Image (tube, rainbow, N blue to C red; front, side, top):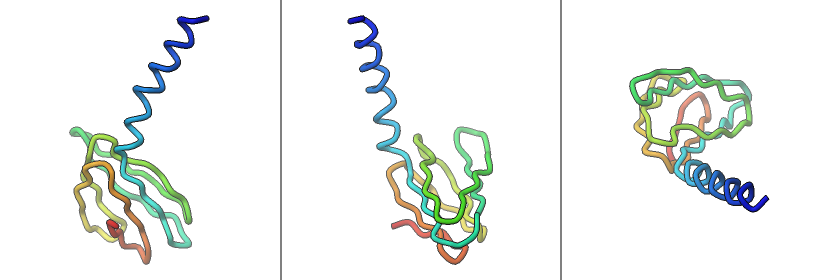
Length: 89
């Protein structure tokens, strides 16, 4: 039982810092948008629904916005999509 508690605490400690360094993206538009995220040599399309907030890029990445603009994210940024355009706050 004691070992299980220690393992749970350690697992939480390893996961928690990742979220602290992720970029937060909020879609303020009334429709879904797709971001293209390039991270570590791979590229993936990430869909974000209307009014939704997601976490991306825990290690930093390049993001292509819905309007084609590109941004470099290092981790702790807050990004808002409004009018189809992304803006780092």
